[in-house]
Length: 241
Figure 1: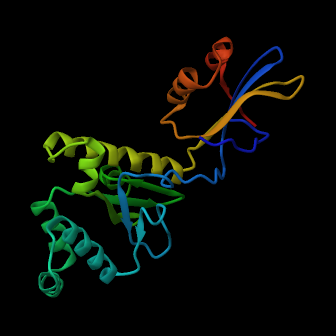
Figure 2: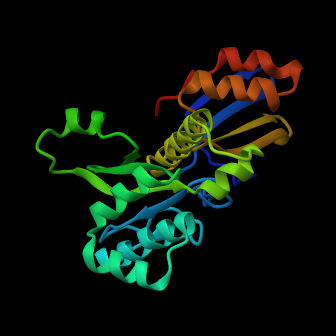
Figure 3: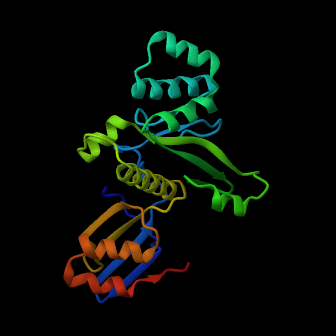
């Protein structure tokens, strides 16, 4: 979490005498949730946007760069020699390379879809985007997120990859993209608990990516708001201006 500069207009607020709790959307948090991520690697190719946070993630310019990334993944997993790498490059397109990674390695790889319409949204599933944009005018696949065998073994302190581990990693990668989607959509919040008579902060913190207000309230209740002020969470009201 990060301590951020306060704003004047909260989205939700509760007041009891001199005590005030405010929750505000951060218009520009300056904090990318991909910065510091040590799980999945995003690989994206888009002419207008740069996604993720390098060097953990990659933004590619063309299909040739994508070929190199896919070959690097396959090489790390299977230990290709120079001739094998050359022959694969010459005879396999990127889709066949992707299929080979899925079929012949333990790499967990999920597609990344982008909706670009009055803002950006990203997901590992196109289902919702397909429903909202049946003509595929504003959405499509722009890359993938993956985790290697070596990384998964390290994360789980395991000697071999099981289906249980792969399912766990898939869930982790989906959660990472869900958080990044909230970041792209500007669903990033901070709170401030303060004495309005003295303007003294009891506590304040930002960089929260909640699914909804109830989710944020639970996190604040569990870890941030002192017990004697938690009743203010139940009094929060949306502010209209």
